Length: 129
Image 1 (cartoon, helix red, strand yellow):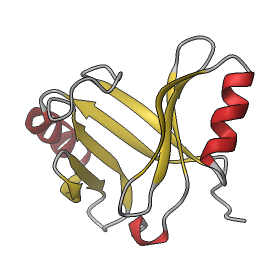
Image 2: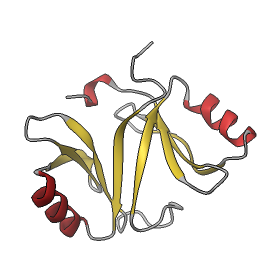
Image 3: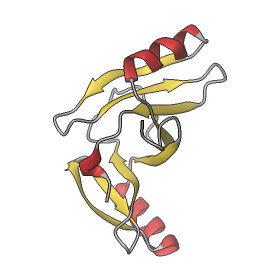
């Protein structure tokens, strides 16, 4: 079992102005923005290449149920479907149902009973580093 399971090792910024968001965080923290899973997804890395998260251009895919501007912690889990089931049983709601993209990432977006947004995903080794 991965040491990072059930912890937040990744975050996603959603922005309806990704260029401005890149400029702001790039100048503030020295973050780099580069190719991700293709438009509208850009990976965020430190100058040493360490992966921090990703930037999502929310104008590219409207109607996802996500707000136009957000930051969300992505929590690594062993089983996305099981985590979604347990979250909904505990009073959470599903924003984006479990989804698998061709690069292998399996993820879902949820809200806790207070309405806070978070995501869960299975780790994919080729995305790290």
